[in-house]
Length: 308
Image (cartoon, rainbow, N blue to C red):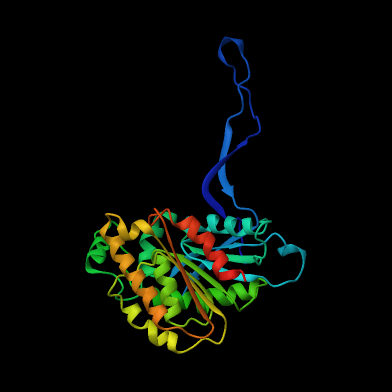
């Protein structure tokens, strides 16, 4: 496998070797070396680019390994992370902070797999293509997408799920020491919409779902099919954690108000359709927006889905 260190979007400075001293004024005093700017690396992570036959495009896959990975032969819990271009670094470091929590220990060590795009500027356009099920977007959202300078379509969730289940997951299982039960799937916004889609489709890969501020509109067809999906039952322990910010419901942004209505309907459906081996919990974060709710919700998602 062609692996390379995963690099984030932040930059760090390192002192470059002093190749030459230039005079400073008439005194000829040596100037300090010019710092070399280079990407900041997230330690114990690897990346590779994988072409998907299902989607017909390339994906950047980042793999975060636990500190003990190289010290034995144990298997680790596997967790997939959507929107890796913006969320992988945060998610990896939150998971690692749990490992040094002396007050609330017990979080299992994990291999985290982030799914993103080789060209970060395209991530916003391509996630609309890959994370949205057919029929899930309103006409005004579609019109806004189509008016963008670059438009790659929408409604490709089925193909993207096939990529994860049939192409990426077998590669991860073959190349890394991971467990195949209790697998997590973390997504926010359009990513939360996609995790809800994977649940509704009864994906055989995942047992743990974070649906963060899911991009569900009140009339989303996905919600119509959810009761039947739940009625099929669950042989393995399955957990769902649903979150949103209070200001998504009460703020002045209309699209977030609509999504909050969809999230409430999602919660109502789960409450009305309990099932054995299915645990659904939720949390609304006071004074939080669609954006500011992400870090605390992600932290709570690890607790709700993987502890106990």
